[in-house]
Length: 478
Image (cartoon, rainbow, N blue to C red):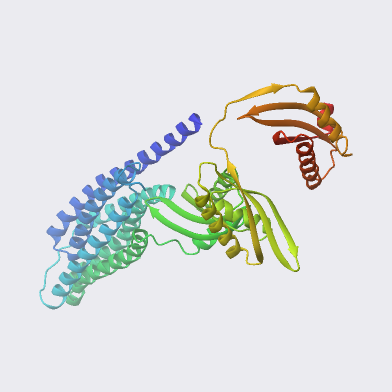
């Protein structure tokens, strides 16, 4: 277990280091690109280059935000953030979209001003072309590196950066074309080609808005805990195939950073033991993780009546719901009506009135759940709540002889042994072991035990309680 934990921690540390490294390198590249574009933008007067410079400056701000968000999102859960800090990446991506849209609106306003109200002369230079081509090369490298790590670790913030830089490459290409057209217009005396620069800026703004809207939808979905299309049905189908699951009541999914959290409610048979329930919960968790690997899964169980439950199971189910145990349940069909007799143990310290009230409520619930029952008769027994001092009498040859003589009346009994006599509060208790055939049905075993107990008490009225332990014939031959 320790080795697995160490390995998992090592992989987690490697993931964090790689995400931070690629984000840090992206910051360095953003600084260089921004500085170059600003210089040639102001020198040339090109709105296209200036829009790209502002875009790159915004890239720098967003890359720093991404770097910070990656560090925050990698923090483990704490008392105030029990689902971890993964939403920091989603929040950062949303902030990036807002900044992109803001800069796009400024570019559009400036382009409209230059097209219709103010003429600005653009002076293209080889330095401008050099900076723009270098920008394409750097954006290509950044986009590939960021997208590789983003997909590897499902980081939405890094993916937003990667897609933005890929769009930047097309934007810079548009600016280069616009700059070349302006230069061609100046050289060949075509004045209207001067509009190519603000038009290129408008195209850049349009591309930014398109990418921003696309990423904004993904980010808003993550912030609003929208589940991926079809994922809920896929999880439900997987969980319904788990042995022991009667139904899937609810599936809820949310995402924090690169990890999913699933909340699943399933119906299990109310007869399931704690150990069986634990196994089913583990299987349900595994089924969810087949759809969403490494998901944090919370499974809630609800007790359900199984379709195969008998009337005895339904009666005991109601008793368990009330935290009491019934035994020796007998159901008789008398004239087409069902009559139930049962034994119920309650705390021996309860007064009769309270005990009777509990039984009345239990019987009412049983009738409500099993309406075909016409009547219920409950035998109230006291459940011991204290350890009573007693003494073992030892052997009583006379009593043993009498008991063995009684047992001989029952042809199923092959042997009587380990007879123990005890005295508790001046009452005599006797216990013994009887050997019966291996294939004797349990119903007949119970009848034989009951009949022997009755005969013992008839022959020895001093006996307060008789306990008979049945053993198979094969077991006594070992």
